[in-house]
Length: 243
Image (cartoon, rainbow, N blue to C red; front, side, top):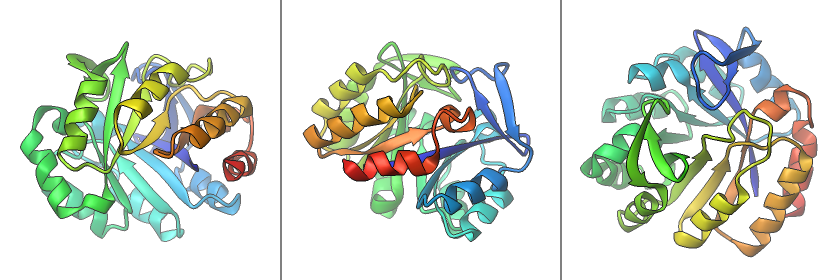
């Protein structure tokens, strides 16, 4: 089970949003490279980067920051505004190890198939859900599409990995929606990265136990709990290693 420390970028700073709401923002670092250096020093191999400006505007806009993070030697999983093949190509050329596509993947199945054809190993589809329904455009628009139905459709298209985020718990520090994550793990055979709501080390222990039951639990994204110093990256990695 991998740990993916999260860095969310908005207007050049490292921030966290509560339930994805643009007006519920807390800034933690003026320079996103600072937490990236700390995560690497603690032993993290990966970092999960979200371009919030890109997610809201529809095009990635923090490429220079991403290049800087990748140059530190971290594997970068990047999402936020990737809605054209050219955007994906530019990010991969900048050193991104894995691209995360959400909004357009929900609306354009042919686009998903082309992404799978070009970059099967470097692709993850982000499924963000509120009450089990897919949300898009930086979580501001909730569709009628059930998240599990969408995941099954992606699996049929050959997608190898999804990131499943429960919006209602994200940034709330109330614990993950374990039931929802387990339903998703049971529904599709592809790799799943769980996201949303991790508030303490016990949550990661629960996920580590879940990883023993489901071999398709790739890892867990951790954000606000790290910034609020509920535990360290090293402690999280130690829990994950025991899984």
